[in-house]
Length: 410
Ligand SMILES: Cc1ncc(COP(=O)(O)O)c(C=O)c1O
Image 1 (cartoon, protein in one colour):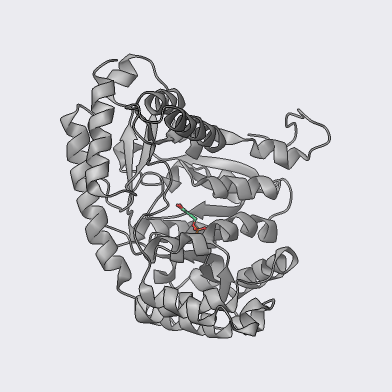
Image 2 (cartoon, rainbow, N blue to C red):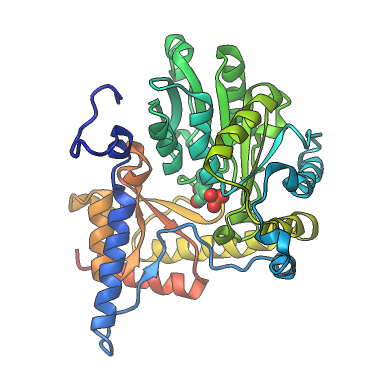
């Protein structure tokens, strides 16, 4: 991929906007809206409602202590005021205590912690803080879309490292030449990994750290699923003492505490990276309201074990949905992480020549079940589909039955 000669469909728009494109996700959204409109128009008929399994936005509840803490602070005058960095100190102190409990790591509250509006926001802004136009950055393929979007915003050049199912999705850093390593300024990864739903191993992150140190590369580890490994232990950049020299790790309240709509996350990292990201974000926005931060503090301090019960629910959903899909002839690789199934196209769809997006469109049209086409996560996602386990198990099983009945007609 080159940044030098991008298409210019509309010369009044920036090249970076054109590179972002409208994407698979926007098309999927339009299809979901069209299907829902059909359901409304066909009121009373047998058209089943949309079953949206295309977003990692959970139906599970956040801890009540977090909601109560937010509610009790909503009317306070300081909650309505702009919140500058200094006022985030209680939040940063809570994060510091969490890092000590969770990883046994002493973090400098003043220089190594930053509040974010989501790890999506953080990972999308980070490249602007550390890259110049044309700089090269390594992404795993498939990748989370904001990782690629952030590179486009910074006019950087992505270099993709394909992950393979038959390697257990392990990044093979040795497949990259020394010359390419020497050309990189940033690398972005995250295990547990979305979309492949793989917990991964600490050794993989440690290998990335070694490369980052050797080649002077900024290492981003995006870790919103740190509490949602179902098999194995989630890796973390913070487990490697070198984080302080070369990297930044992103954590989120969206998955561990089901607070996605409140947009709360944080980064812990090398002081010079945190400083640069903070400087950049200072241009873009202020911080989340102190009322929201109070909820985040309550989640960290009073509901630290919340993810444990989420794991139980997601494990049951994973196992039951996998069995239901297998029963209708769709083989499933059991994922090691919660929240998603990462599915090969079903054999009959492969035989009929469907690609990921075509299959998702046809499935939605015929059954009202929405999945995410794998190609939305990069070229390596072609031939794959992501199913989010964000409905109760009975609804998932009913969805599998709808899918099975349609597959039988192909
Ligand atoms: C890898 C990854 N990073 C970031 C995000 C977004 O997290 P947040 O809600 O904190 O922005 C997601 C959400 O699905 C994700 O899978």
